[in-house]
Amino acid sequence: MFADLLSRLTAPSPRQLPDADARLALTALLVRVARSDGTYDASERDRIGRIAAERYALTPEAAADLRTRAETLEAQAPDTVRFTRAIKDAVPLEQRIGVIEALWSVVLADGQRDSGEDALLRLVASLLGLTDQESNAARLRVAGD
Image (cartoon, rainbow, N blue to C red; front, side):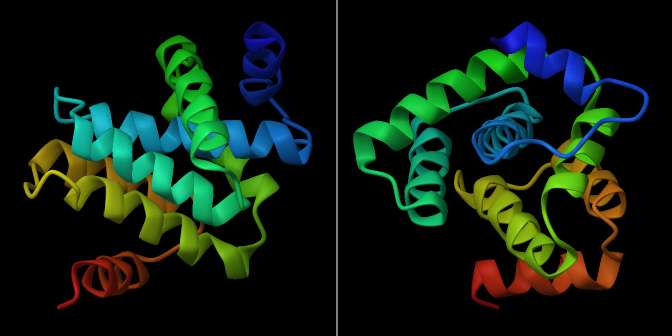
């Protein structure tokens, strides 16, 4: 299952993903961002589960299952650029701000920001077709500033 999804995500011209695959890919991107600072703690896992539950109207158990599958997919996904571009193709522009807000929410879940996380979010925002200003505004909304 993961090998097929990964081959579609990393194809030179990825097709739009079915909804279930797009959910898994987006959740895996949340995991990748959470792991980008070298730690992946309970607060980040909990935040990803809550985001998945709210975004996709899942029970806590179904959200935890999605997060677990996303952790496996993220560990196997080699290329953040193509991975994110596939998400861009799956998520309409007007909903990508919500994606970047979710990503910032995960980054801020452990109470610390690191330069690696900032750099990854900057790259991901750009790949999603969002500006640095839109990403920063999303971060401020999430942080409550």
